Image 1 (cartoon, helix red, strand yellow):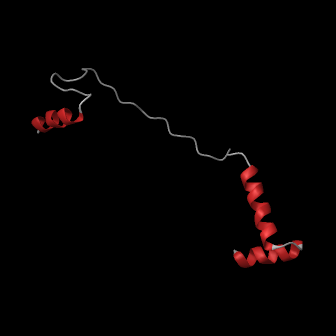
Image 2 (cartoon, one colour):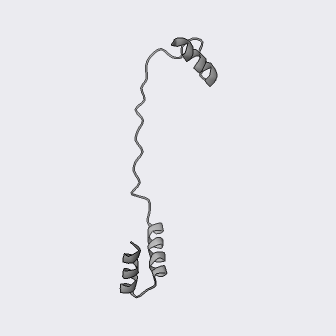
Image 3 (cartoon, helix red, strand yellow):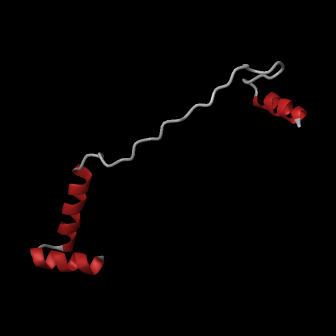
Length: 70
């Protein structure tokens, strides 16, 4: 790629530095329209709610509750 860039700079009769700066300016000026869209999350819901005795605000108590189940 470096050799091709040097060759292109020579064809345009400009320095390699000028060619790279021009390319960077062009790339940074371009809007980010090519970004991928985020995937939508497919939420899975079931009836029932939170089991009795499980405190969802406390991770350690959730782990203890899950540990009792197995």
